[in-house]
Image (cartoon, rainbow, N blue to C red; front, side, top):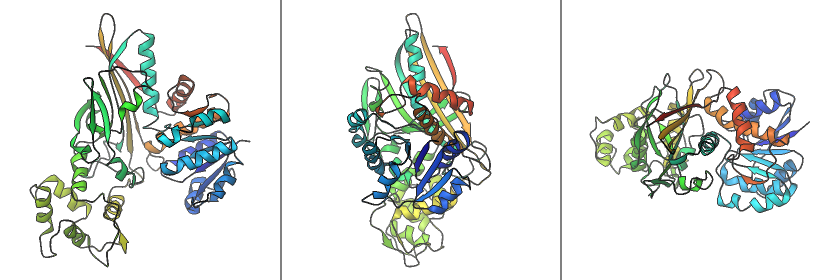
Length: 441
């Protein structure tokens, strides 16, 4: 019987563990600092075992866990992945993670090949399904003798149309704290042959609307450094290359208002001493407690008190006389507490993932637009679409590694047929399937 170590108990871990235990009949060790949460994920199944792990140096417990399993899936914060990878290298144990490859992780490629192991990264939804769909489209075009002139890829995890029912058009199917990183990460893409660089500070000032056939109009903003993938996708010299995120329209201005009010600042924790949200917000804009907080915030943001942004901030609770339920914290702690309270999914509500790739392709006698779109909704009272979109690709790839179907070694992404073909095939069996279209333009 194969043994798998799963590190972490976040939003997306349960579908992964379910796959290992229920489908593969693997013994699964779930390691976390929260033994109660591990217990909920294992749900009394005899093949699941809880391991209390505080993830603190010198990581001797990690070393002991890794050496006694056949594969490690790391679903903890990305800053920890290299530490886990080094333990896997020491004991020649394969590793899977859904996170982006960092420079430090990439530097382990040679050693991973020498040790004969695979450290497979970026095998979730975005990154992950987007890569696999992209490579399917790109390789098909090449087989047909076409040349891709423009390639754009979009990923999203948003409320379903049915349950898009708050003023922000967004809810959390993942940790709200991840918003801090996502909202402040610089981005680069290629437009008309020129490299466009966007600072983290100006990220949401560079958004626009995009139409997705049969789904509607969404807002997009650039996702990290797209140019890192031009070589991976073998699209050197391409005129347009863009990787972006999709949101319901209005999202970007809303998040920019948080930035303008310094609400994303997670430094300099302060004592609240029974302060209310209203008093906290007044302190953010530097006015006294007798000042109308709506007017003060409107003045700070240079907009009318009747604007949608002010109404959103009011709905979130930042103007309320309710006391902040924490003794000490940062501005971001206050914001994230309110967001988690007001912007989480109810058990009966459905999230939605969309992965959409589109290419302009030049053939000898025509130019085509090709699209591949995946849209999946979550299950009421069950797994979210996002948790399965992240957990299933990682679980399927892990099984393929353990069974010897994936034989490549090194620090890899799912951009080779050996990986993406069988993973996409099984995802399709689980309802995660691309619908492809092409038209002559």
